Length: 185
Image (cartoon, rainbow, N blue to C red):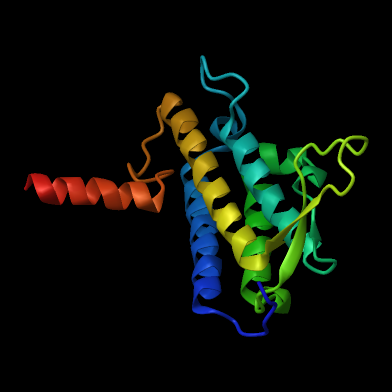
């Protein structure tokens, strides 16, 4: 893949999709209190909505932090307990990430980035960074977010919280279910 300065429509769509997920998380936070957000439902221990949302947000933060050097390390998360326990802290982090996704010029060009292999053991792997691209990492973030939204949905439903039935469902799954309903009609 050759780096290009063109801002592709696909890249624009990926940024918009990620922003849509993050805004969905903001709306979700408005439905909860800090206790439900930060505690595990009975039988779901250690799974907490706040822990999953913190994990999601820290992946975005690692991505954004790595853009300047073109080296992204998702294992270098801060694991900020405030985001995990406080909806206000999570909301602030989400707004900051959305602002960065909307305004960072480094997202406006397709280029190669290097991503640290997960749990790379420096003694066995000579070069622990793999080649990727801005668009590919935006797609990874989107998929990762939906995956953890599904876990958040299960956790919150175990708390007795009513959620939109589509929350945490991959867009391709939603399309598949809609086509099945259309065929059945």
